Amino acid sequence: DGGITQSPKYLFRKEGQNVTLSCEQNLNHDAMYWYRQDPGQGLRLIYYSQIVNDFQKGDIAEGYSVSREKKESFPLTVTSAQKNPTAFYLCASSTVNRAGYTFGSGTRLTVV
Amino acid sequence: GESVGLHLPTLSVQEGDNSIINCAYSNSASDYFIWYKQESGKGPQFIIDIRSNMDKRQGQRVTVLLNKTVKHLSLQIAATQPGDSAVYFCAESLGGSQGNLIFGKGTKLSVKP
Image (cartoon, rainbow over all chains, first blue to last red; front, side, top):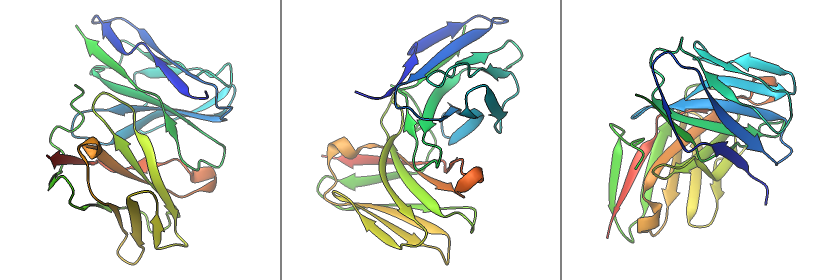
């Protein structure tokens, strides 16, 4: 079955640490996205990538970094520069014409 | 569970009734619209989409209406069931190279048995 997999489901980070969230898809989609979701708010775009080895900043990229070395994978690193990282993170992928996104099941990141 | 529904507009309906969830979109140039359903602790799931050359599209128990004049989108759910309880998001897109989806804040639907 084709799909998009995020791991881990829950992640705890200490102050000052970097953590990396995994996103893998086997849908052969060219484009991949990372969103942040906070309670009572819509999805906010962090980074997106339309093709391997290329990515663009979204609306809230500060404190985050990404890589796109393989078509199937788009990991997100939450750096220590992100002052308020506690949130629900969603990865998505789409075909190049962006006719609808397929979402992963999310990673809940909590700072402890 | 995931508190994505906290402080969102809430629609409460009786099981078996029809539900109407509304969305105002921002860009008159948007030409593609999608409704997603998000259950607690899960990622959003595609429900139905519509392109700007249409004003109505029907799926299984769901209908999307598009009014471009007032930039308004609605999702109608027939015979609402407890399993329909979730947060519903609309999303708009300009298509082409500017086609990243822009999501609304969502509406929480609660179905009373």
